[in-house]
Image (tube, rainbow, N blue to C red; front, top):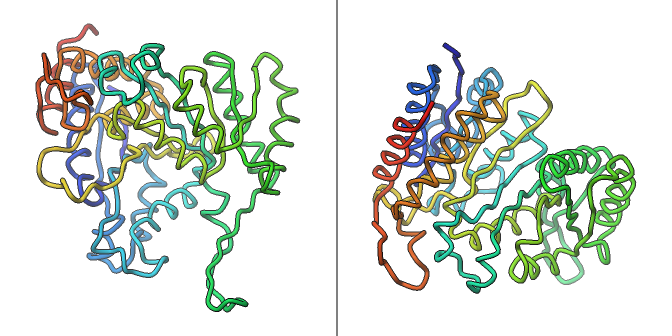
Length: 368
């Protein structure tokens, strides 16, 4: 029996609901394939502020460092929006990324065939399929640059600074090239090199590194053009590598064209041997918290990424992904992935708990 230690941060809003769903699914995997998942629940985000006075207690970070992987729900909510920046719940995410050395965020965006009607794009576009992965740089750029407020010539002003080093660009680009090599051998680099000096360096390093990967086709898009092409021809993308802020925005756009932001998982990775963080890309959705309406599939699919990337269990990860597709093919939907046309023919609306029960049951019944 293989044993794995998972640090769990339910967080705020719908976080505890989607985390409970994912633990239920992981337990079904453990029973099916004879694995033992040990969970240690930790505080971070708004609930940590209320309980300990800080968004990321030192004990939480230390426990995460000593775990095999970290599973996170969501953080934040309107009740903490007026706090100063260093005390906001989101500061916990930045602290976890920097504290664990998680410099690469992988965000697969897949339009599952049963969800074609939930895609807001033209049916002819949706029918061509969507299957891409964003490789987002996670610990550099404007989110970690110098910032502050000062007196300017027009009065008080605020500033945030975008900074990237050659090392930071090289390591995220290399991960993008390696991933593209394992997929359809196409890498798109997104920048704003016509305006930003940091993007000019970004493009220079990407072009230089391409010489080591001649089997991978490389193209470059300005971020504004990339946002348009995601709508016009999403099937043309394979692996997209980009900066922290651009990746944050574009992957949310990709989430919506694949049916719902409630469908996109993510993995944040660092150096080999360091625990990764697995989380949905959606927020805490406080407006539906506690109502059994949240879509747990993004978190469940993040659990599948954890099985594959952190624990080296590809068969088990495949079982989770196949179970999700099976449940969707059977017509089960949370409210966010109902047919965008308003049709409910053949679809069955379910809540958070029932969706996770269905996925867990499909895993239990599947072939080993």
